[in-house]
Amino acid sequence: MPKSLSFRPFLLASVLVLSTAAQAQIKVGVVSSSTGPIALVGLPQKNTVPLLPTQVAGQTVEYISLDDASDPTASVAAVKKLINEHKVDALIGPSGSPNAMGVIQFVAEAGVPMFAPVGTAAVVLPMNEQKKWVFKTTQNDDLIARALVQHMVAAKVKSVGFIGTADPYGDNWLKVFGAMATDSGIKVAATERFQRQDTSLTAQSLKVLSAAPDAVLIAAPGSSAVLPQTTLVDQGYRGKVYQTHGAALPDFLKLGGKKVEGTILAASAMLVLDQVPDSHPSKQIAGGYVAAYQKLHGTVPATFGANVFDAGLLLQAAIPKALKAGKPGTPAFRSALRDAIEQVKELPATQGVYNLSASDHSGFDDRGRELITVKNGKWALLK
Image 1 (cartoon, rainbow, N blue to C red):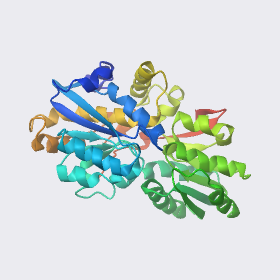
Image 2 (image 1 turned 135 degrees about the vertical axis):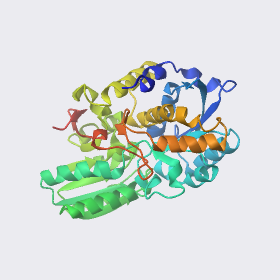
Image 3 (image 1 turned 60 degrees about the vertical axis):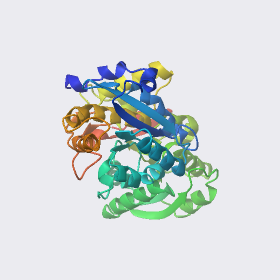
């Protein structure tokens, strides 16, 4: 790994990151849902901010962090505040897919590049004049879905029930997975949707069970991925359950307990770092991030926090090039920063290796996913 992109600069950061306003020359706004229904996603993202680089190419970087309480309307207000009052050069967040979708217009109008640490690929696809300002630090749905469908085919699954959130995350998963399943000869036998804050999914689970599918795919981010599966088990379902990378967090195991045993999902190697070879491009970086986070907060981070950490890696790679085009705080710098991010190639990070382009603002390939199962209450590499 090039020295300029090593993990070492991140270890120099501390909780003093947010107190450097007087010296800061580059401002980065962070909007996270550290409270509210998707706090299990947003809190590790907020907690990762102190681990981001505070010095890049001789410039001090200031992070201004705001909480949107999981409310898309508050996300818009926070982004506008960061752009109009704080004059940020880049944005990280918001945490939720609906929240991120709702701010794209304002980011594009201001010409401020944004790193979206969210699940839905709809923030960057289809690419257009607005979405060209957005970069996604999670794997696109098609990359994850392809691994799941391939496993289903190998397991001779012929029909699948789908339960997804009634929002952009669930929408895009139904679209992407539905097409792949059909092309692979797998029938989507039932489709049910729910709101993230729902406390009962009995009706949806009974409808899925009545279709008698060979397997069920649950497309939901964070803690909302748990209830559909535990409800199915409570109703007597004993078939295969697949989850998306939205379930890749420690609390999925804690909240689901024995009822999520045997779950199959595709996600980054960060869940199974001790089980992948040392040659894996993400192992050293992800291991360093996990260790630093654990030292600072006393707990292991969810992969959602790593999505923010990767935004810091991308900034560290792009800022030196952008500085050649203009000074921080100017439209020229922000535009050049967007262009430089788009040109990042072969950058190893916690979630995979980034190869960005004008048409691909996520940039992951198969190195950004592993097929994983839940075995004895822990994540295990599915071999």
